[in-house]
Image (cartoon, rainbow, N blue to C red; front, side, top):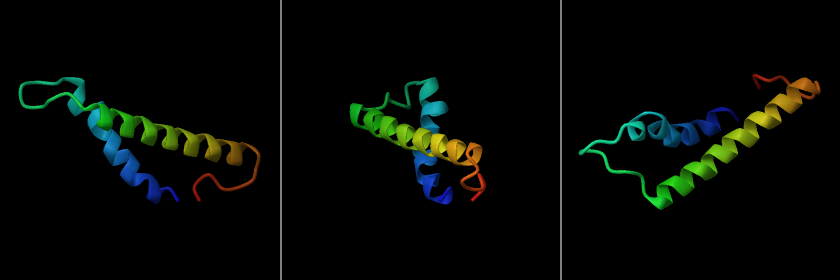
Length: 64
């Protein structure tokens, strides 16, 4: 299941690196790009929250 989230991570990576310091060669992200990034970030957050809950409640192995 963790591997299924790799695409989400790869979409968000530029927001942590490339877009932090825009220059003449890199334009700012579009509204659509930002909306997609927010959606993916929410999915990742929900996934992590669920894994923490499952681990703390003893329902599953966190590394599954």
